[in-house]
Image (cartoon, rainbow, N blue to C red; front, side, top):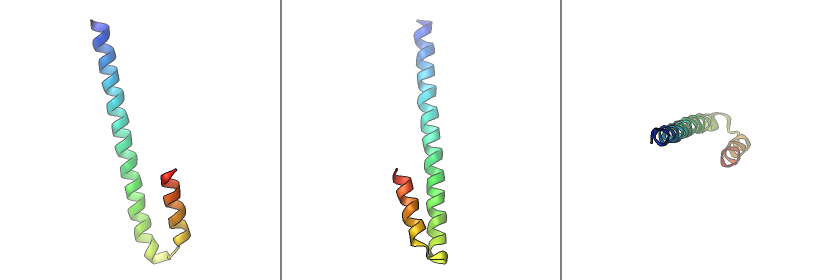
Amino acid sequence: MKEVIMTHNMYWKRILSVIIIGLGLTFVQTGKAIEVGLMLPLSGNIQRYVEFYEGMLM
């Protein structure tokens, strides 16, 4: 019974870590998107903007 509880806790810790990492990456990508969105009107570099979004979709 104790082994089952241990693996269950490990399973939940793995799920939590994946969720946290996923949220972290989403936050970073959103930050980059905002940064690029702010830079785009200044630089007018549409090619870089397209490449950025293609990279995000990969």
